[in-house]
Image (cartoon, rainbow, N blue to C red; front, side, top):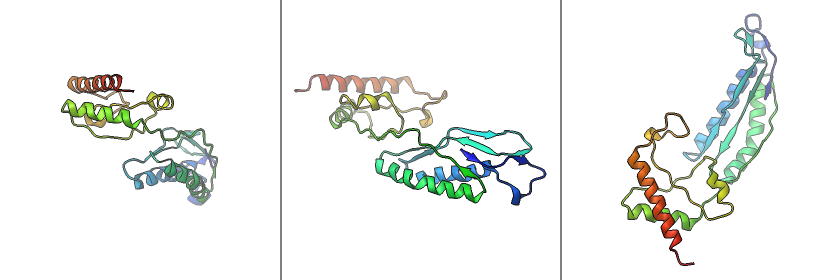
Length: 194
């Protein structure tokens, strides 16, 4: 949360403003930039933003927001957790505001079972399907299952790469191919010598 001072938009000159939304905008850029610098595996998201008092002619005095970082490397996340609060605080204070940050949770990266991943890879190859190993940044149920039993995941292509959205679309033949890979991998696992 960023706390500034709400004041009249028409009567408050720039030198007297403690605009929480301007401070938040600078912090949001600081969420995005380090993840982009870490390549395609990094994720930095502000998915919630509440501006108060939410009036057209009032300089915002308070902004509540969420910050989420994701990366397959726990070391990268640790580094961000150490550097981000101070960087954000400096940006906020430079705008005459105060920053209150609370870390709600941290979930470590969960690698999947190498033998299960290999069974999926082999199944795709046997079926003549193109495949590649990817890292999922989403918190799928498989993350929690993998803590107890050997686990892997199979992803199928979605139109324009869009997922977790109403517009997500998959062609029937792609769904069928994904199911066939799953079937082949499960049978291979079941028939594996213990």
